[in-house]
Length: 72
Image 1: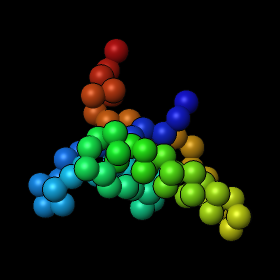
Image 2: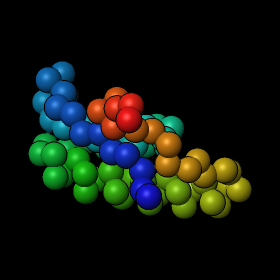
Image 3: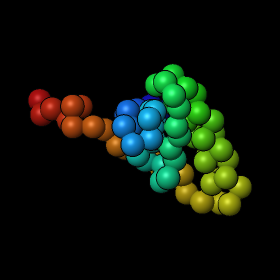
Image 4: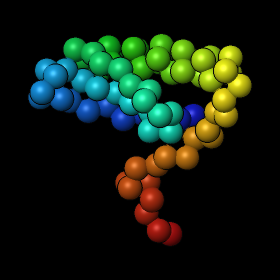
């Protein structure tokens, strides 16, 4: 399982913001959703590498938006 990714359009910024809720402050910007995702994957790799180098805990994937939390 991998981390959930949000990609939202920002009127204020005039582009797309992508983030990974499980990784604090891991986000990126792009003019298109695809550009935002590409930049986020680079940011994710850098975030994980920095955490490993600093000996910080890497959180497991946990976040799931409400759409996936439908009771059975």
